[in-house]
Image (cartoon, rainbow, N blue to C red; front, top):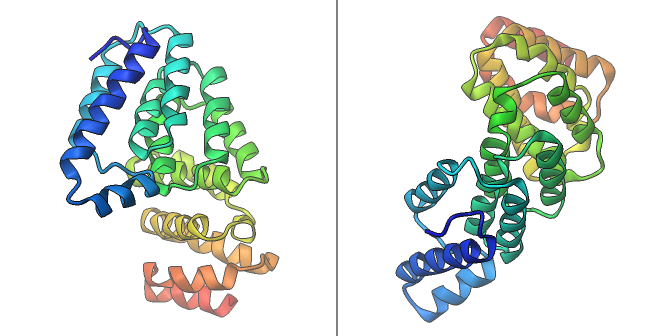
Length: 244
């Protein structure tokens, strides 16, 4: 595979690889047309993992080359090329990375790509978590874009599922104040998944969060509470139900 610092050559090589594996998965002309229309090529995940691993083994790629290649891959519009573009920008410094993710998420309605953005694109940022991280997450949660808000919720869900650091939990609950009022569709589903994951981590704190949201009269909170009740033991479930 071409070295990623030669962006045009690299993008051309990536396109040839994903199209080759897409061709191997096509069963008929009709299936091929459906894949093109859906902007999903069904490239096997091990292939994407191998490409991203090769990218991560090239830490010396200049930031300008990373960004140029990543934007070209993103603009191809396929799920797979967008995932590879996200692998490329992961190596950027925060001041370059975050505006790119913000821009991309605003026009992305593919939940898998958004999740990859949250998981892969933000990985190093989470690893070096600091005040700037939480400030940016608050800014994104307060923004108008539904997809950007969804990116934050996916990032928090991944964090709760994979981290054992309970010090993050109070910050997460603060970020989620009033959140249910401003989400819909896939974002709402992810918020419910996140609150359920929080309940499995800390039932008492999550119960307190839900009760506080009900006391505030947050629109939509009743529906979310009913979706999350199954995660609580009988005594806490009764306290929550009494607040409904």
